[in-house]
Image 1: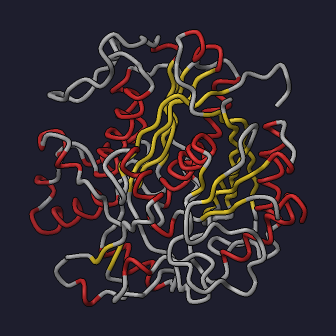
Image 2: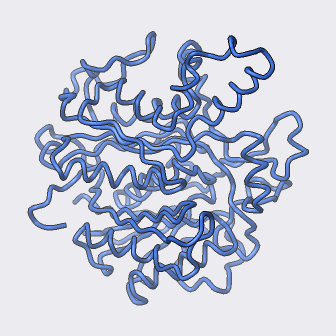
Length: 435
């Protein structure tokens, strides 16, 4: 980052995940090594190759009125829940310009800082969008005819629906965006939010990701690809990045939202700054629609470009929250790309974690949630450990946090969060500690 470039502060955090219904409970459970992965209780689940997933700890129906949920896909509902928490945690007032959902309490803090809607943006991504709505609506159509299909079906299934609802809720008129790049989607959302603020398009941006597609068709589809763990008798131990006995990822659901704003705007209102979103790097493998480039060159380039965008050197890094999904090939390939991107010496100085071992893989929501984990690791000086890592893969030769949370050194520090997606999408976001 050049000296003249606007610095972007992280001032609000919100989430609903398999570990907790809000950000504090999620972070506490993560540090404790708890698992959000459980056996599914569906009828006929025993016929599926994979019978477990990382489902939400707190169902949206426990938080939102039923009349609101009827007009929202599950991924949209949880995005609103996470955004409302992030907004209030940033100390913002009830937004005067926002329309919101009829009958919903207005989010915000009494006496909080008011944001000009013309200077407020939204970048909120989903990799798949309203899968439940699309499939359930088709079932209604087949069984009961077209006249019984909900008139809200299209806005409920469209991938930009969550971004649109959040923009309406808070009166965001600087722009509402939804970037779609599979499992890299919300990593890109954070990067685009940084760019919006640097470009002067907005002072404040609500950014993040959401995903809820734990459905029999999705379980069958990923199962047919042989991409998911089949440890049906031990769901909580199924996601095990870097372990010799890993056999695939675990599907998860959840939403995570950050409030980003220019440092000048944040300091002028006396906001608490959790850290700085300093830069983002992107690349495309141009190799295969599913498989990553085995050379890892694209992933390495994304990390190098994130550091360059942030004005950082590899030696500034103390931590990486890796994409590490618990697939046999992907985990060690990413470690090779880390060494290629940072250089051997710098790569061996960072503490690496893989939080999907507890949250499962939130697909389009993963990058945002793991970005928040990266910010909190720097802020609190502690890295969550990798759960279920019992027998370290022989090919792993970097410093993996295992057995217990790892302390980070005091003082200036930076970290990366990596997100990679089907289609060859590579995103790395750089964060710095607020001192």
